[in-house]
Image (cartoon, rainbow, N blue to C red; front, top):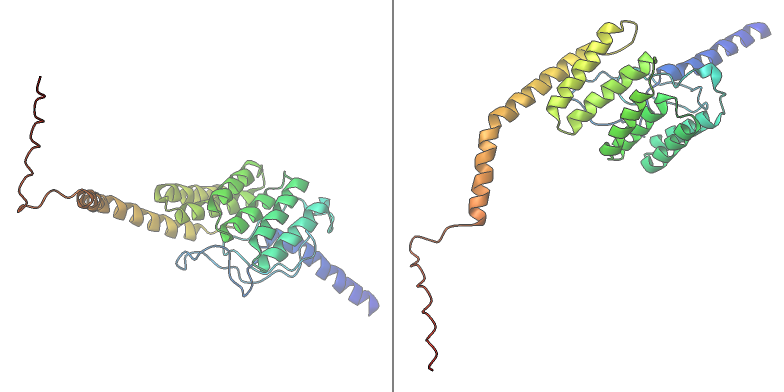
Length: 252
């Protein structure tokens, strides 16, 4: 009996450590997901994760993007390593919606191990939640530069970059981002992803691009009318003002 319980405990601990490789960023309090909704197009994660290899912190399902990438080789990082401890602190702050503290903790994780792209990913998600989209853009770019052959991480970052382009209203770039994400999934069949989401979002981007093109003449007319109203011509019933009389010549 005792040996049976020991076996079950060992198996459960192994699952808890491995779970971090498939965990999304920690959700905000109340189950809120990272970022804004995409009209139902983004798939939601189905279950929360009980523990992480980065520090044993609870990591409920967060961003409804693809299953989160592993933060490097879990076997090479101790549970309470500086990197793992910083990530755990960041996750706790994120769940409490203390986004500045979460950002700081994720920066500490990056300082401890700047080669792991997951740190940049978590930092970018916290920056988006805190309203710092420009900084998030830079964090995601850094993550992609450090992704190397970590295909799960790269797919995750490509997803959030395309999503960020939508938030920024850059629909041409968003379409390009979703196409790049879909292409990556098609050439890496072993990577878990959401090709259907990319297809749906590409259609949305196409519709917005078409709408912007058709609306351009109307927008130009509105801008011209605003300029006219800012400098209105004289009313029709107003008599033109006479030119000022010349100054009298000085007597010699």
